Image (tube, rainbow, N blue to C red; front, side, top):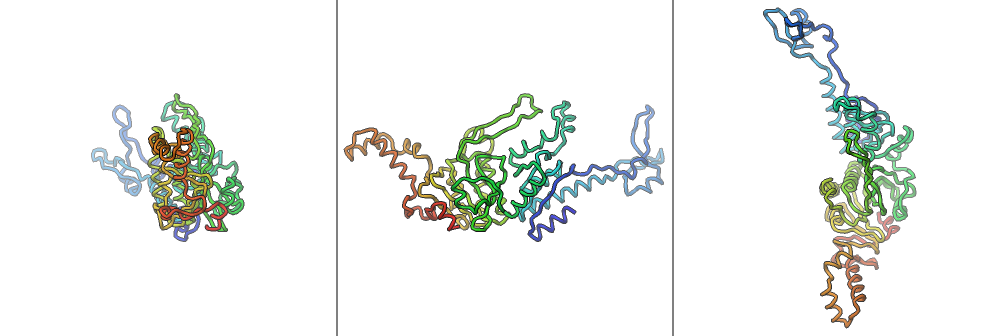
Length: 441
């Protein structure tokens, strides 16, 4: 039934919402011959195998397989038809259809009670998860894990798959306290109506009123993603948080040496989770068939050992892949006093997808490989300042330092007068301010 409903939605391009409350694939054993098979005991009284008499074996031949034992005149049972296998095969049918559907239509899962095993996979494959705080997403229950580990390490399923875990790791898009709150959020997600999610003044200048609906709000908090309306049309929206944020990692009760961690994140940096969140939002918007606005203000990618270990290179590459195959119009906008440096400029450049990307900047925006202070140290060194001083009759070192700084900063400038130097025309579509951008979209 689930498969048919999902297939119907996919073929007709309807949104699909899964209200999840389940204990996973049904565990079954054959009830038909459960009490019919007889025990064959050895001389020591130990069980050797189960068997059926020939008449019984003929009667239940659709339920069992066995080999005839001539000396005892009965059939040793080697296999019992287990209906649970059909259940698992049916589960595979569901997850396969969901994997197809998420590429074609808007798919949402609302976890209103626990969802386990194949239920968890269906939720994850749907891409957009709304999770009630008291409803875990699990692969295995805590009792089973405790049994396997031989210790009472976990005391609830919430520890394993609650919103503290699933919200912070990016799987859950929205955490809610009540079912009604979740339903209202899904309605907003479907129609992009007013949500009350706060946005900075620059963003408010561009989008329609109070139309922003945030997604993945607990994950990668130094970037905000969601949906909105601009001039009455639906858009995906991505923009950075211009202040220090934190990333919480809970301890694992199974690891006695672990502890809760709060990692502080610098603003305007593309960390691994930031990059993944951006790439996933681009992908989701492509499936939903809506245009995209990226307010780009990043100083570059994080490149420390931990970030490299956490796959920042992979997730940064995902942004490129998703934008390369994005089928709708994409607006990249560097806002007032914003900057786009190094690799972050590379992944958001028009050259990624010239058929769909339009690139605009504010007059006060800055774009270059490095920040001006770093560029000056590499490209306007002491010999350059000495040469300049001789050419212009300047001996004041502080003045020469100021001149060097200003010159390098001018190299970051697109054009404050709203004009674009000829060599930039293939890179930048226009120098506009937020209110002007709204008119262009």
